[in-house]
Image 1 (cartoon, rainbow, N blue to C red):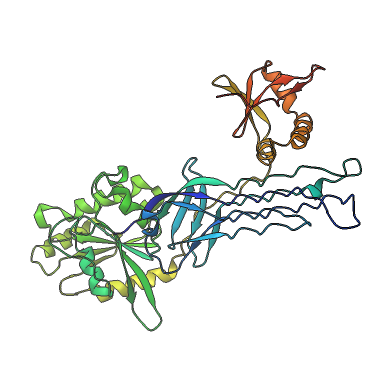
Image 2: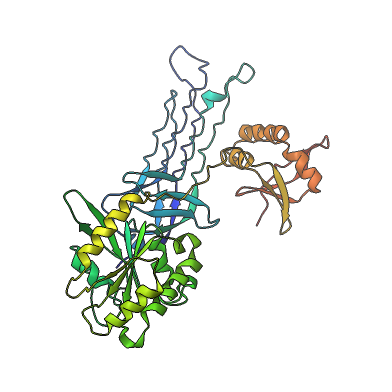
Length: 432
């Protein structure tokens, strides 16, 4: 089975927790803090190549999780970094964020890699928080959660030339004649249900990749028939061979079929409608083809028309050598442009949602996620951070009242003013 589209869930490894420890050695009665840092988690990396041709490996298994970092230990021993998880994908895989549609990577080179979920940082041990005024901190950071997201993987074949045409025009037979590929061939429409690749070898050291693509019908740009399954694979090609049933089998006019397919290409993508084409006037071994060939040549004077017979092989050599000449003049395929990620933090925002005040901002959410909320000293440090970061001011402006619930990331807090009237967002976690 040829799989060219799938959705997968990826979760990078969380960072390891920092350690709370103190030196306990003979003759050192007041040993200082010695807790080590946690190790970083593993990232999720997609790597193109490895001989893969489809996304079948992601059909049965759709959830992937990288290793988390090791926890810190006493005597300033840091935790082990988690191993990255490398997932192999075929060349031509386009990667998007399933939630936002953001393009993350276009993997068209062998060995090309893309980090699709970044690992969490390790939490700092208590030795990192010792100061001249706080010499024995009894808290440490938790590891930062690794990124997680759903991905869309879409395979667009990397072929130099694509065979296009209406169903049963003879594309598969041509591919079997000019290459070692053996696609399914039968005398009925839609015999080819998935793309098939073949290497066309000409002179010594000269060859190109030819793709036999599923037949196209009217309305394919909107998904009719094999629709997008066909069109996504033609986007990578540099040149198209438009195969026509010149004999008009079944009463189909080859000139009308030519116009239908080019209209569908232009509707799907204006760039695809301008892609260079040569015409293979197929089935010239049949008597009805001669008259239609003259009509085609007269109606398309600006197109190169090659009379061929996929059954006998007539004219195929001339067609393939001309295709090779055109390929030498055409530029290589360009990858999709991935917008660079902005590294600046999200601004602090407060919104009201279902009766709860939600504080948003990557820096604030990360600080809460890495705080041990069961540790009183760690919570006091978090309160001081809320004041510095402007969280309290933002909540007051939003109109929060004592006793109301505030959510930051995955954590719920109860808003309580202290005895001096200053706001604080820490209290007992509200009961569900």
